[in-house]
Length: 315
Image (cartoon, rainbow, N blue to C red):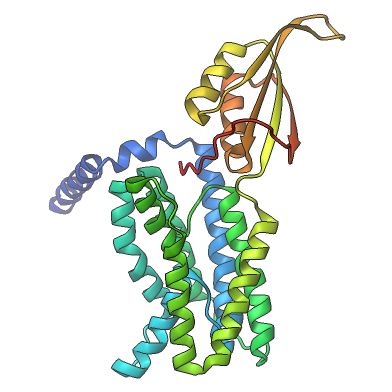
């Protein structure tokens, strides 16, 4: 009886705390479809990052970019200065925890929740996947590790999720100053290269540069964040769709009235709008809500002459 009462009291206080920090309200506001989509991307990124770290980076003494590379550095230095090795999974998590607290208050609650899931999945897989030496050639480790890591990052970006680290710092400073802060990533990666050179020799710093370059190229190949796409929507409910496009995507649209289908001769409206690849999943979601019967065609890689707002929205 006492245990049951204690459990109910404990659950009440946990739910109350979660409500006070807006966690429950944020979770309820996330659609099941979007939640499943982003969690799947988090799982894929976590698994691929673990493969890159444990199959290529650690065996070849090659360092990744951003928080992952910094976690590798701290893991190596822990053995040299305190006598035992702190796992990469733990250092990676430790780096991101204070940054996620900042993100919760400065960037957005949904962004932070999915970043937390992604960081947790990555740390978990890095811990569970064994370190396997496939080759002792550092160049091969650098190349294939960069390909695997870049693929994971590309799929993460396609679903508008972040792996934390320098993303949080850059987005926070951009929100407060309105400026893009590319120097942060450059400074972090430069520090990683410097420590790699001092720790293992400068040739390993050069191998790490290969990894960072290959990873960035593969990421661009898998996903180009600002690739423009034109959507043509044939609908019987143009007002509902226009409202969603304006409010959810902050995009404009052109409407063509009195269009007619040749099959049943029903009067339709045709909407034309241009979005980025980063907004495509959100676009599909709002279209299913606004008009599931709409007929939509998508044209990729469209060229624009005129004003087009380049947004970088994390939802």
